[in-house]
Image (cartoon, rainbow, N blue to C red; front, side):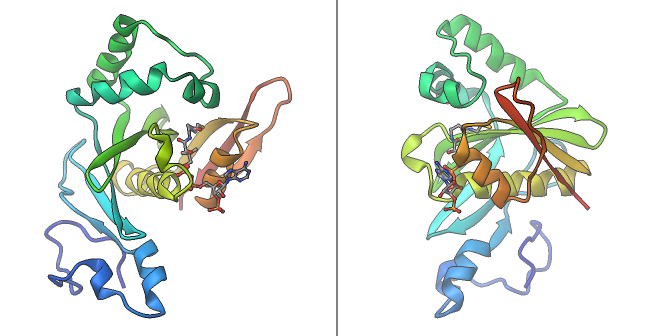
Length: 210
Ligand SMILES: CC(C)(COP(=O)(O)OP(=O)(O)OC[C@H]1O[C@@H](n2cnc3c(N)ncnc32)[C@H](O)[C@@H]1OP(=O)(O)O)[C@@H](O)C(=O)NCCC(=O)NCCS
């Protein structure tokens, strides 16, 4: 079965029942975890969203928009999140607003929000590094959604986007050595360690795309 379908593509799986209703018995777990559908995917930059069903919830990544500022403002001020990511927490809304405006204007990078059943839970970015190479950055800012598989699946959707839409050949990342949850999520998505310099708080990982 084709797991990914583009909008408008012939879909032999088309069925008015929900994907969950279509899955049954032994196949249920496998299909709820694996069934992915492209919705609203059209040609053109940033016009993209994907969804999949995981444990009966729909996860989607979609491009950021100006009204997402409220989430970034909250997450960027969160010191727990800062400790797991850049290490820098900024409290000035004026400064943060500037960062956000830069993101909206940026035409090299791809910024997505992660939604579960329509609720925004985090963001994932593909930052241009070099031709066919992007750096992935992810934050599931709503902590009650941690460790339910959503981070892993948002990373996989982003890798798929990078492969199919950006012709990426490699995705790279930096992660704090002590951030074992993130490292495990990246490993589950096929990322491998490429650099572990004890002088740096970050290790580097990458995933090659064939
Ligand atoms: C990192 C993050 C994206 C992961 O997403 P998530 O939805 O919470 O994680 P998942 O459920 O997909 O996977 C987490 C995995 O780590 C494992 N894990 C959790 N804590 C762990 C620990 N201390 N040691 C080892 N593995 C751990 C979980 O068991 C799970 O693996 P499993 O499925 O094999 O059991 C999310 O937690 C997050 O955004 N955290 C805050 C910001 C952050 O750290 N961003 C990454 C910066 S590089």
